[in-house]
Image (cartoon, rainbow over all chains, first blue to last red; front, side):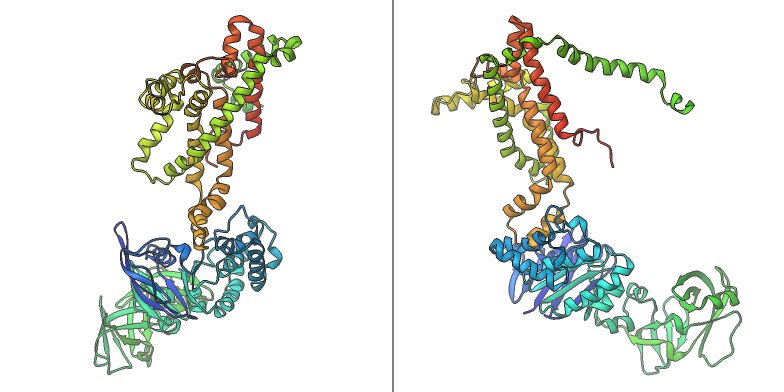
Length: 352
Length: 266
């Protein structure tokens, strides 16, 4: 009852190389920048495009291996498309009944099943509406009902929340979480929003440039990002360097004291912006790390201001707006940073 | 006031109004010269009724045939399934620009009794197309089908492909997807294309008279009847013309300018 994929797929100069086994009842988020191969992955799993090499198996049946290809119609997959792609010429009920009808269920039975699926998502009262006359949040639920009514083994969601405004998004995300928890097949959720991935998924696979760069639980992803892209998503600074004797020599300049004296060799270190303190003059304190730099950029974010400091090494510091005013921070201001050794979270670079 | 004056430069207004008059006046004169007193008896005369019946029959059949093979061709062109789509589309457009009499000659060359295909049809099956009602349908379809194809191809091209993807993931066969999703979603283009195609078929003259001749009751459609009447009785020609004019205006009203607006990106 698993989905296992190990394939490559070419689109012109771009190649997606993906290998993972998906377990039932586990929500896997696929996250990555534009052009990372998220859509290609989704279309390949759905059977809307074919692999170039390798294979895709659903429940131990080969559905695509370059020779045999099971078209999407005959795969037990359900897809929630970006912007939902509800059929505009059909009512909500007809949209949801389309799948059962296409699979040769009688008209009456198909409508009963569709109504039941809509009811489970709390939108049965919309059954006779035109899809143009419902809200984004409602459309999301209808799209989910349409995908689930055919009882797929593999549920694919393409940016299921990106069409919604911020307020609706939060409510719909909570409902989606409940629906996905009750689904016993494999779920793949494609998103570019780290919050969706962290809150909805049990496992996050990060794609960059057509390759898997990290495959981790949401907690590990947040604590130990492996690439600058993931670190940026998580809002932390990622430093790459070489560790020895309690010191990290950072690639590109700078040395940081570490609390961990045992680690040796190539390593990554995460610095949370909240752990970095800014000063106008060289600080005298207990923090083992203190180094000078210049403010390169200031970004307001909720109740803090994120200050990108150009230094060796460059880091992001999060300070209060009051601190920005007191220190007189603007672009080009010279500052000192201090950071406790214990706040440099260092870990070995995994061998690939 | 001064602004609206400035917006009406004489060098555009005068030639523009001349163009408008040129297009409208002959039609008004046609209505003015119409033999209204004997109009009813003319249009219900056996010749007129027969031509009208034949015109409706052949133009509707030509439209149906155009839909039967033109819809698939429009889809093939839109999805670029065949090689060299741009070249193929040019071939489809040629009959739009070709003088209809040339189309008639080409049809004779191909489907005439001594034509490349017509010769085989005649000697092997005894089927003769030129100078028959079937020939009229063929000539009308040849000239009118491009209107359907070009209009519908645009509809297929602007269709959001994800609807078809969604239908496929829901288990629909390609036939079901086409019938229940693709065709309904291009419905407006299909109707517009079919109406334009039918209007063109109804007015077809040059290819028809060349390929099918002018035999009352067999190949004499309305435009041919008008042409024939003009040599004997002008008032009959005018009365029959008015019927065709009414049909054209009716088509325009039916489409309510929706599909005939100049291409403006909205």
